[in-house]
Length: 113
Image (cartoon, rainbow, N blue to C red; front, side, top):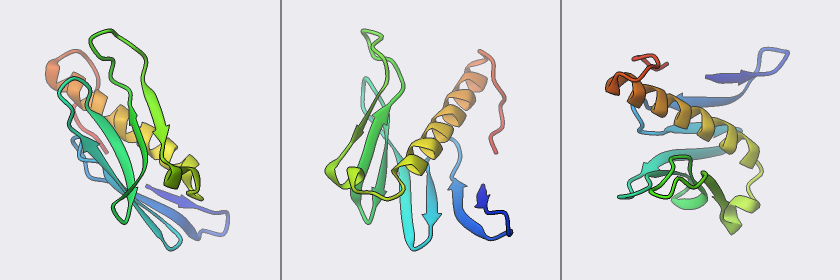
C-alpha cells in the first residue's frame, strides 16, 4: 500500500508480510518494522526502528476479557510518524483477525491483500 500525494509522489509505502507476520513501513528516510509478539495468553504487536521498540499493543482480549491497549515507549513518543504506525498497525491486526476467523470458519475473507 502506498501513500501518494496529489502530485503522484509516493510519501510512504507499507508492505504487509501476510498471515500475521507483520510488515514494513518506509517513510522518507525512516524504516519501521512491525512484528507479532508471541505471548501465551495475549499475543501482541510491536513497531521497531533499528531494533528499538516504539509501540507495543494488543487488541486480543485475555482471560478476563479486558480491552485492548497501546503502550508508547519513550522512543515512540519522540517518533515523528507515530500516527502512521498506529494506523498501519491497526490495519495489520484487522487483517490478521480476519484471516484467523476465516480459517476457523467463523466469517471473514480467507485471503488477505
